[in-house]
Length: 176
Image (cartoon, rainbow, N blue to C red; front, side, top):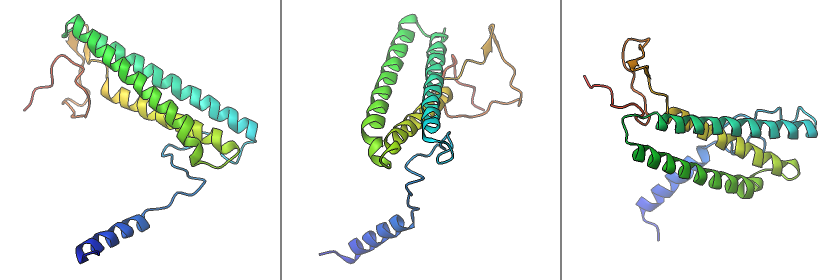
């Protein structure tokens, strides 16, 4: 038997669920915009566009990963063994991300779309979104060091800006 407290919690939960916008078949579960013109291209052209967008985002994610590895290698304040360990762990994280992405997009995403082209479409949109998300994450966390030839590069704003990222410079900025 539900108490008044339980009933209130259930009603609140239902109200929140009912107020959330429902996804239509056209929107799907993806937050990234579809880079191809769904419904405006013939099916072969649409499929080709999705394939090329998938390949393009995969190349961009790979470039971001390679840049992150270069940032770690450039950390001269760390011993070589520390850099090697960091790179090994980063590589392992990338491998695990790819295993998750491939399984999710190959095995789960096709069920989230319409039949027919929907299977390929959902798989492609899943790959595109995951690639873009991982690329942004790597670029935000592993920025090149502001040091140029032993000198700190000038800050155009004249002050240090706070930003959420992994420290990739020898020391954190001084606190005021």
